[in-house]
Length: 155
Image 1 (cartoon, one colour):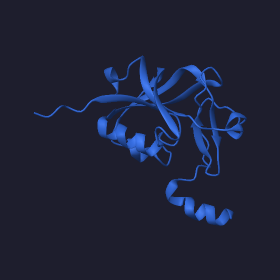
Image 2 (cartoon, one colour):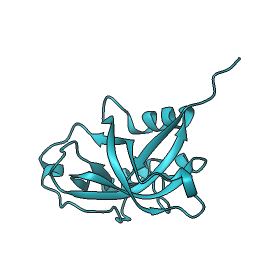
Image 3 (cartoon, rainbow, N blue to C red):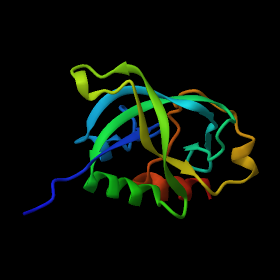
């Protein structure tokens, strides 16, 4: 007898959201709608690839709006690998509340929930001083598969 896969809530705030380059990682997951963190966090863009980061500094910044997904064990494991958990990001549960339910989500979209989020754990002055935002809309991000060419042009 096999154990059924678990379902996990994951709050995404950057390039995993709809219309952004890394969304394919959550394409097969259940999109539950737009959600917002209960507590303020600094959402910033930085680095040579214009990556979005949610800094591990609760109370600093704004309540961040992003998307909530219900993912299975395999997808959660893939996201952990993508985000390099333990080295670049910490994965924690944070409280989020629904702003707008996804069309057809019905009962699956909770009002409030504790969801996993990936918080940037190693950052310096550049990110600490970067402008904070409420929602990620920046389109300058350079996906991993295009970084070699971008680095060569910059050098």
